[in-house]
Amino acid sequence: MNMISPEAVANSKRAWLKILARYKKPDRRRSALELAITLIPFVTLWALSSAAYSYGHWWGLILILPAAGFLVRIFMIQHDCGHGSFFANRYADDWIGRALGVLTLTPYDCWRRAHATHHASAGNLDERGMGDIKTLTVAEYRQMSWRGRLAYRLYRHPLVMFGLGPIWLFIFEQRLPVGMMRGGLTPWVSSMATNLGIALAAAILIWFVGLGAFLVVHLPIVILAGSAGVWLFYVQHQFEETEWAKDSEWEFQHAALHGSSYYDLPAVLNWFTGNIGVHHVHHLSAKVPCYRLPEVLRDFPELRDIGRVTLLDSLRCVKLALWDESRRKLVSFREARLAA
Image 1 (cartoon, rainbow, N blue to C red):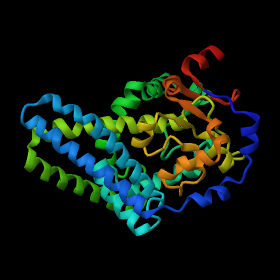
Image 2 (image 1 turned 60 degrees about the horizontal axis):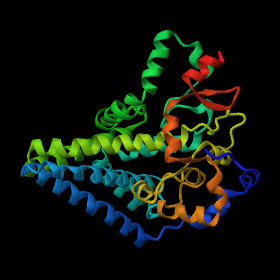
Image 3 (image 1 turned 90 degrees about the vertical axis):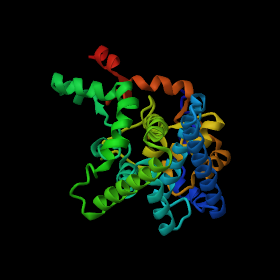
Image 4 (image 1 turned 60 degrees about the vertical axis):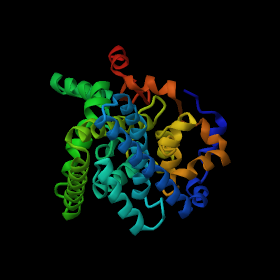
């Protein structure tokens, strides 16, 4: 991982919210094109995978992999809709987001509320919770019972975090407005309407292709895309040089710029992930459409040196699990034990 240069530190003091305002306006024709070139290939790949299964051409199921990639991209468009940045028209963004939520198994209005909380409090030690990956400090971990420590270690295990966790989240947990049960009618309407949409879409597909083809094709696509999505969200905030602060010290621009990573991915992965790897810029201004994030890096190359994580670097992030307040960095369980 790159160290932050003195020049980058100086530039971090810029009034980024004002600077990034010029990038907020989407090109609505470009947005429509991005939606089309994402949905049409996804539907096509899904249909071809189903046909391959039905005709016994099992090799054709390899198309599930790119289909999962397109489902990740569908989620990223839904994500932009949630921020009101895709068409910059609240009505259009919301209803497109709700429709895409049926494909991503994500109740749009529930997710949007939780995600707004995440953006408003990312990196704030006193506001951890909704919309975040659970992260304990070293001191909190040491104060837990052995059962609590075991539960947290299991939660943080890669097989749970990126395997069982996404299955539980997307297939089961999001069927109810978990964490928003007392949040009024909207979370329930969002969850139940999404569930109804999922049930209707599944029934229609099963009618046409059969239950076997539906399960063999759709479940792996959802699981792979879900795991990729959780991985992306993890790397965006769970990297060694991330920053957390108590509420009295927390400041939005600094937390956005230094508490979120720049996940420097190969071009093809940037495309499938909707450039969400440029996450520090996204947290600075969530109204910038995903396809305009590379413009910001082009015009302000100093941002490339802040929080940069390469694909190889990201593999080392898996071991990080606890925030060490004394050293102000994320550490592994082993590092915390040795420090004790």
